[in-house]
Length: 192
Ligand SMILES: [Fe+2]
Ligand SMILES: [Fe+2]
Image (tube, rainbow, N blue to C red; front, side, top):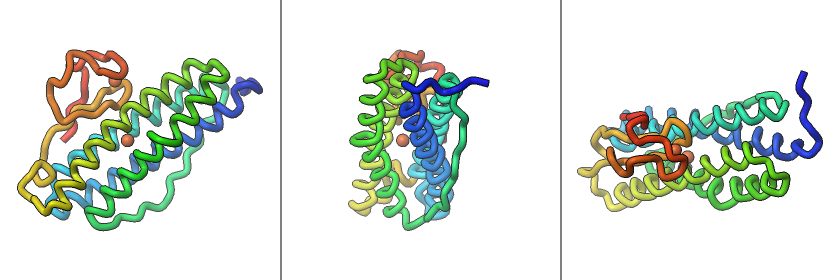
């Protein structure tokens, strides 16, 4: 059986923590999508589903590296508190901001110190994708707070998710390739 090399122990611990964060974000966003649909915010529901799919991609990528490094995959899904539409969007944005500003930069620094390229890549891809989620959640919050219901947050819409890194866009042809991981745009998942 594979064992975790001593120099990878902290990296694996960080990967497990990121895996748990991404898996819980996936569960949370799927629950928030149901609430958004019920409240008539069909476009915001589409966004939650797209981001949920991206978090699942991050979780799968992290899990693959954990196994490569000889670790064991374990995930605890926590109880989900579903609030109002605005509260859910703010919870989602705060989670993304924590990952962008604190969690992933710290994990990338640690993996870089140990020259662990597979870990650096999966953390970096997730970090860059979370920036797209933060941008879209912030936009949805601004629209909701402005009280303008006749906007994209109300109507079901397609989002485009990179199947490799989870980069998420509202634009069908934003680039030829994913700006984060270079996957051809025509491979992107269409989530509504
Ligand atoms: Fe995200
Ligand atoms: Fe990508």
